[in-house]
Amino acid sequence: MHGKSSRVHSGTHLWSLACAVLLAPTCASAQDSVRTIGGFSYDAFRVNEETAHWILAYDRAAWITSDSVLAAPVDLRAQLGPEWFCLEDRGTWHALYGQSAAEPDHYRIVFHYQSVSKPSFVSSTAPLDTAQVLASFDDRYWHFPAITRNQWGSGTLTYEATFLTDTLQREIVRDVLKRAQLTGPDQGLPPSVRVRHGKNSKAKTLHYYLNFSGDEQSFSYPYRDGTDLLTNVAVGNNQTVKIGPWDLVIVAEQ
Image (tube, rainbow, N blue to C red; front, side, top):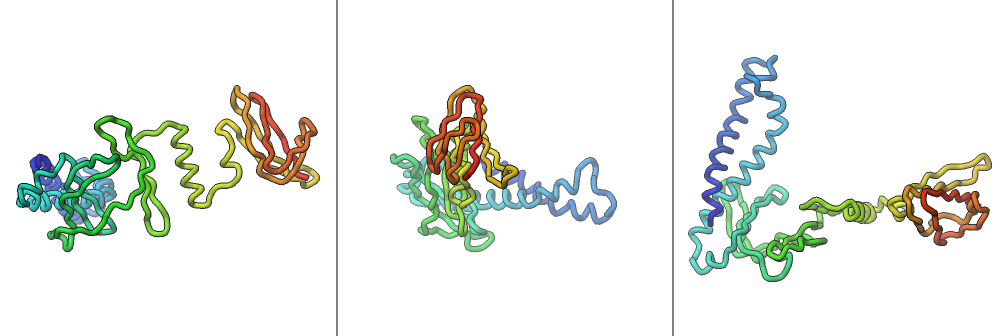
């Protein structure tokens, strides 16, 4: 368990940080009108105080549970890999020790500790990870999840652990919006096609499709039957419409 030695410095640093959190209000109370103390921005630090408390809680979870792991039977400790995790789930801290399984996107848990009070952790067998893996790294040795989705209340949380291409990022955002029922027919258009809607003097609805690319684009027209005003050709609902490079189509509904 090389993780513990690396936490000693972290814990010492965070203890000093916690002391600073406690001392700063005392210093400020002596001079309420001064918001910067010795070049240190008190207001800026208070904004990050919650993050400091979270990091301190993380360090506490790692320190306490790593002691329990070191005291565990040798045969169990022999099953451990280099990866271990601490995470918070709605106020409850969990510490997981194990190793990556042979199956992609799986982590075999050997020890699972769960907080029962602020300084105490107990061994737990409760299931924890219900995340759905959407995509994984294709590295030969680090085949870990890159994009996951998990339930959160009545909705979902999609987590991206890497930089994505513009195409993939667009598809993920589109999928998230669709799941939240925030999409409309225009979200299915090709990326280079832009659309605007309006009404003419006869109160007819107009749809303006502009192709901002040097390639021909096509899409399924999603609105009521109409007529292409530039060619006078009828356009039906769900009919495939083609737009030439840097061209436009204007459809007036009937």
